[in-house]
Image 1 (tube, chains in turn purple, yellow):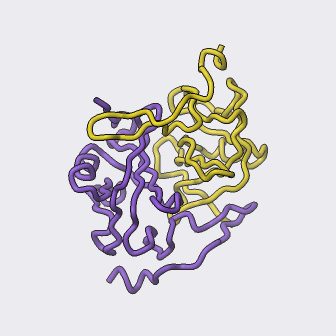
Image 2 (cartoon, each protein chain N blue to C red; image 1 turned 90 degrees about the vertical axis):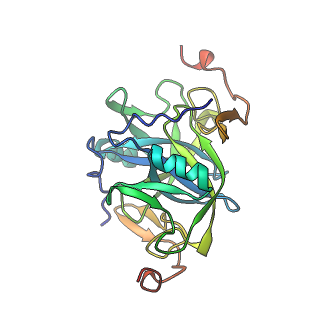
Image 3 (cartoon, rainbow over the protein chains, first blue to last red; image 1 turned 90 degrees about the horizontal axis):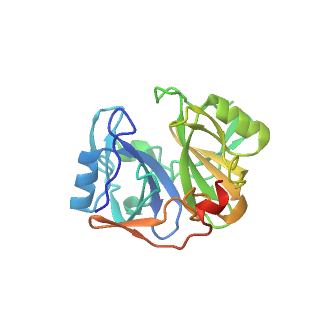
Length: 125
Length: 125
């Protein structure tokens, strides 16, 4: 039986890298505590612990952009996850981009390297 | 000028997802504080903050498996990085696997889904 090590962070979370199933693209990173982990396994939909709002968070509960779990990977230290998902709505980022990683670091600047998929004003009302 | 937000974790770190340049594969996740960030930018080699050893860590300092930075991405909240790297030695994981994520979570079990690239006993002496 495999066990995730939720003891490394004081708030009982581990980071989950979210990777898109068909493209392999890294969409975002969020945090999972034991409650979110259990809900994710039960529902097949990605749940996280919101560190800012200090509450369980079903990704897509506001935007409708749910993440459907296809596979889960665990690392050598059992303290980091990859959620391989199908991303509803074609965008993971609350700023309207496909991926939260829409900017390159170039010298001292952050350079946007893709277009928005949606306007956040249309989605978060 | 872009600024990484190093204030979210008490130890001044942000997570860095490490992605292989040619394959797009996620190799590992490690933590970067301001010192590691500056060293990474200066040297072009991935540096991290070891949370267990509480010291700056040049990836590959023991194994020789240095990670050469090709690109860096930053997320919407400026508190997570992707280091896109060329991985010397063909393996990122100290357990001898190409990726630290060499196991799938299948029901209650962790299932190894790839072969070792090296035997750790031959590399860490």
